[in-house]
Structure formats: structure tokens, C-alpha cells
Image (tube, rainbow, N blue to C red; front, side, top):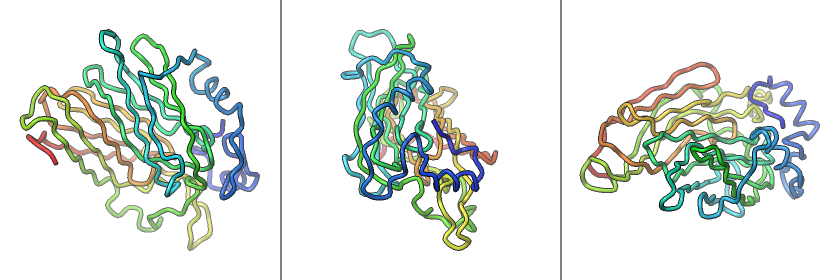
Length: 279
């Protein structure tokens, strides 16, 4: 498995020239089918060969069959244990098999947050299987997969000029979608948005014609009061200006606090009061 996050732009450029990306050639058009053994290798590398149970009825993964924009592919994860199951879902890992860095994000869920739905946007570099793995509190892993047709998402030109990437860097917004009209112990939805270029290391500066070094949000933590809602460990596969919407059980403790760091060591923080209602 190849992870470009720590590579220099020169090394990344050399690997692109050789066509190496997660075990298959980069696909800009007419992409070949993914290698059959990619997932088995990732089970070894990412999950230490732990058993994978059928996730049907426990976790689902929604994604377009053919992406309109390979750099902004919507993904929806839903996870919940059957009624009467005393365990909880503690972690969800989103894996894009054929991406240069296949682990797109790891979502660690707060013990009392009972997060059931997560929506985000990712880059997809070539035709690929996408896997979602839910880890229960007893360590059991449940997996589902889907297939996405997309090409060149990781190397697509950045929307932000590298020279102006610091404009509004780290600016945060939290949109709230209340399940009831009163703040309290009710299921709610929140959407965390943060301004960041999320450079993948595979994009070319259109002026200098040099590859832009990788630079992205690597950790994002969301709390309500002192209670953890979600901790996200991300990589180059999360799209520019990361956007994560999720449902959770609110205690009404508020406020919602967001803390993020990026690969250059920059820290971004924001605090947002709970709203009585949302739209």
C-alpha cells in the first residue's frame, strides 16, 4: 500500500510517471478494472488480517455508481446495531481501494453520541471498490462494499491557487439540524465545514508546473460540551474544504466545539452554541 502523505512532490511525481497507485495504474480515462487482490492486501495492511463479518443490516454505504466530479464524490455511511444488542459502534473506516492512500477517513465515535449517519465528500482516483468497516465495542468488524466509476480525483487541479491558499484558511462553520424544537436529549444533526485546500501531493501548480506538496487536515475532533461526538483522522482522499454531516444523540450540554490540525501543524478551533431549532 502506498501512502503519499509523507512523500516529497518530486517522489510523488516520479511515482505518477511510473503509474503506481495502490497497486494499479492511474486512470485518467478508460480505467482498467481494479486488481482483484487489492482489498485482501488492505485487510492485512490496515486491519491486521482481523476477520471481516458481513455488514448487511449493521452498516451501509451509499455512493454514486458514476461520479459527476471525481474530486467531490458524496459518500453516506449508516451504522446501527440491531435492537437489543448491548454493544455500540465505536469506529467506522472508509477505504477507497485504488486510491494512492486508500484509507480516506477513520471516524472514532463518542461512547454516548450514538452516531448513526455520516455524510462526507471524497476524491476517487480510478475505478474502484469502496469499503466501509464498522467496529463494534467488542472489537468485531462488519464490512460492506460498493463500486464507484471515477477517474483522476486525487490529481484534479486544486480549486485554490497555492499562492492564495491561506485566504480564509481554517474558517469554520457548523450548521445544525435539530430533531426537535427544544435543546435536550434528542437526536440531532450537525454539519461541520472547514476551509482548507486539502492538497493531495498529486496536483500540479498550473503556473509553475511543479507538483504542489501534500497539505491536508489530518485530525478533526467534534465535541458537545465535554462529550466526544466524533474524532476524524483523515488523509488526501477527503475533498477540498472538508464537509462532514452526522446525526447524534444530544445531551443539551453544548456548545459544539471543533478542533482541527493539519499536516503543517496548524491548529484551528471553533465553538458554536446549540441552537433550539434548525432548517
